[in-house]
Image (cartoon, rainbow, N blue to C red):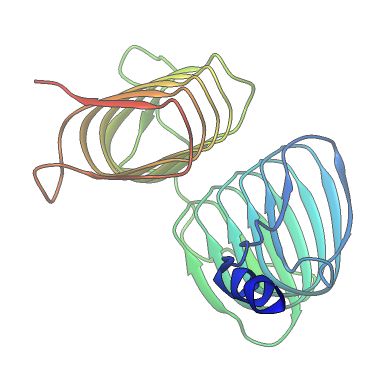
Length: 240
């Protein structure tokens, strides 16, 4: 009997830890000793992270973070303010974020626009300040020019109708019920649910949300895009 129990334990797969995820609320304090991987999918929150975090991903916008220590800090949203004591790697995909660190010299990757990343209390622009998302010739503010802002995040309350012209590097959708028309995008990531997206060309589609409908015409670098994600009830269709 003991042999059988031991065999069952040995054959039982280990359960992967999903990490700490904020999908609602207005913030909080988290000790990374409990779980060092953190994801923030909400906006307008205030967060304090104690201890050594391995990764913090910010998908929301206008959040305020105070971090004791983080190995990998990734910011996909816009207009966030983040103060870290130490950070090893900082990747900013969103726009108009302000990130400061007190110690060390982290490896910085700034793929967005209007971001300020620096040491101490005075952050300096990490790249040339770009124009704001452009409207089309008719003045429609819902039309975004990806040649000026190649990385985009849809974080505001759902039911947005947005059009992207040019080729975007990455578009991340964290809310639901949006309608997007995209000329070209290298990577589309959808965390929210019940979104409808029409794409001309795309290389990768990541669906972690549920009940999304995505149509595309062709791949950018290959005939068809790579489709992945853990969401349920999603529908991806190639159209002519």
